[in-house]
Amino acid sequence: MQPKILLCEGTSLSAREAINTLGLSGRVVDVCAPTRWCLGGFSKWVRRVHLTPAVGIDPLAYVLAVAKLCETQRYDVLLPVHEQAYLFAALRESQPSWPTGSTAVPVASFRAFEALQTKGALARTLAAVGLRQPVTFLARSAQELLEHGQAFLRAHGGCIVKAPSGTASAGMHRVRGQQQLEGLCLARAQETDGAAAIQAEPLVVQQLVEGPLERLQAVFAKGRLVAIHCYRQLLEGPGGGDVLKESVRRPAAVDHMQTLGSHLNWHGALSFDYILPSDTLGPVYIDANPRLVEPMNAFLSGVDLTGTLVRVALNEDPGALVIGAEGVRTRLGIPGLIERANASGRRGVLADFWAQIRSAGRYIGTVEELTPYRVDVLSAVPLLTVMMTLVAEPSAAPRISRDTIDSYALGGRGYDFIRSLVGTGRQRGDVDSGVP
Image (cartoon, rainbow, N blue to C red):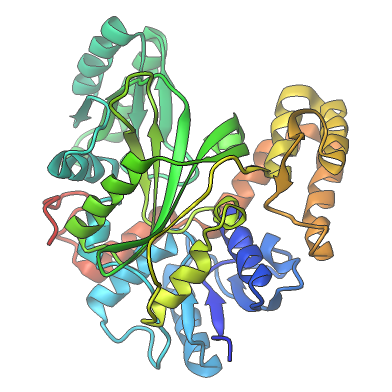
């Protein structure tokens, strides 16, 4: 008998792709969402959409709703596919029996999450285990931001400035000029004015590293790496996400994740972004996502990350380490349409939609990973809806992206709720990176 699975949300791209991979493996799932008309709801593999509050608007109500579902519906697995993984880890820290009943939740310890969750903590953790990262400084004031930023501008012609935490590349700025840097410094000075400076977390200022962007996705079982996949971004989409991908093999990244997973005793899903510079020294890690991220390219490359995560949750033997094959090209149709709307307006949207249908132009040799309408016809509904919306109003592209993110992101209220669970005296990111 297949396990009964509840996805913590059904609106993100990652949730939609988790549904696809589970469905193609013969499973059906239920999802939580603030609306029945969510991206994941349009699938023959979704049995039911449970209406729950948006976690970023009312995190307590969301937690209570999810816990009630686990208790009354008797789910075997509550699968975290986005930032809710951090929330669930905090709940386990404060309430070890959450959720009540026998529902399994595959997440690492809260202390392990804290070692990666903020940009500052990530920088310290990478340094502790000896993984390459850009030259990094923490700017606690506008003056420090100005000093570090100017040094990078002189030496490298630019830098990256990151907020302590963010979703879908929110809070990240590529700075390539003095005027842009001064604007960020002014905003920082306003944020940390007066007493607020005591609570403000440092911004991360990093060297701008040139090279292609790649991502890895991995699943761990109590510190042991059991599945890993890497791919290269071929075309950037809205907010720094992907429109086109190609799977790659990176043995060095495999070794790095084995080391990091053991160091953190990581349990569950973990993803990283890295730059592959022209030297031969290997990946330069720039960001971490302690959760499952868009697993469809991995699935088509021979690595069922979602299925492995379910087995890890149920304490089943995940087997030997599985590594994805290289050379598999995939596309994400909806981000592709949004990217064209931003760049070329309604004509660009129509041309791009037609190119997707024919796998022509920039989509030659690709497989649709987000809305696989050839095997799940319902998934065509959101693709068609976005296309028609953008043809009617190309300027709606930013709003579509923003509304989607708002429906699943933790946001300020979610992070405040997490701090209330684990104690207000503990600041996010202010933890030793040497996690046992």
